[in-house]
Image (cartoon, rainbow, N blue to C red):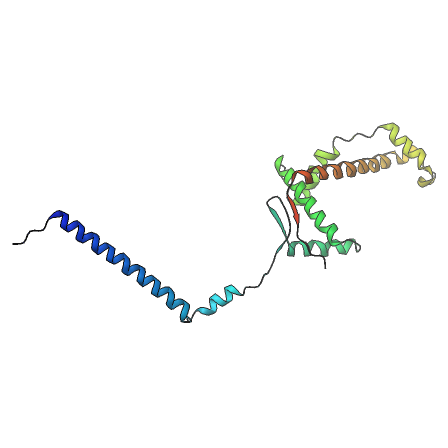
Length: 194
């Protein structure tokens, strides 16, 4: 009877494993070579992937939110229906401003049925609510623009003037707020004007 030592068995196992590894590497190399040389029946799939058409692209982004070309085109088209002289730059800046305000609205946990309503609520709470138009300002505006009111008395137009002055101040503060938000946000515009 022949005896086999334990150390002999281990070296034989190692030799076989090494041979299997070499064969495995040779097999993989041959397989990859065949894939590169012989066109496979499904190679049309590789062609389709390599020659894919770009359907949409990013025209701008604010922090981690992108504005796609299709979103921009839709917004631009809708805006042109109401304001024919609007430029592409105006529209993309408007979209950026909306994203900035929406982000701030979410920070204070506002919730609304639509993004537009959420932005409106944010502006009402953060910008419009703190505005106080004093009675002297309303009276001064009435005196300086009396001819525009066509003989109407102060009491008849007071609320209208207050609303107008509130909107002016809201717009001024909103513009300032947006400038501050733009300073702290990462914004890039990649729109190529047409």
